[in-house]
Length: 169
Image 1: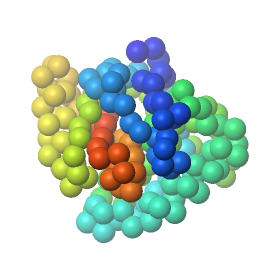
Image 2: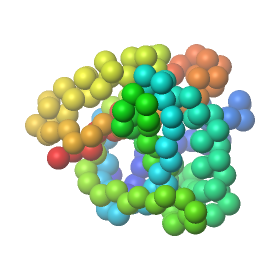
Image 3: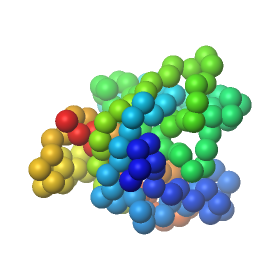
């Protein structure tokens, strides 16, 4: 993939008017390369890794991004990382700075792997992602997850895809 490019995420297939239907084609086992790629960082509160306020933080953050004209359908991903059992960090890809939001720039190489199943499988998928990275003779620095749909939309679609995104050392 080109630097700062992401696989295609088709926003037009959206019968729920909430989360678009995720097509895993093009997302599995991809190499991503970021150089100063801008993201808005948001934080949520968790209880043993179960998010408590994601339903309010995501729409508020997304609204700020849209109002700033920093959203692009061709450059969309939210990388989530549990910094502790009590907190999560979420990195929304943007095309430019968003005022009054915490901005982060990411640089590095990343590998992706698509998983399907309930959210509770995330610890298992993290282990599998580490094994996948090792099979490529690489080492993991940090693993993020891209939650492609909310629980309500995952139920509607009958599939719950998550993309593990491993930042490489």
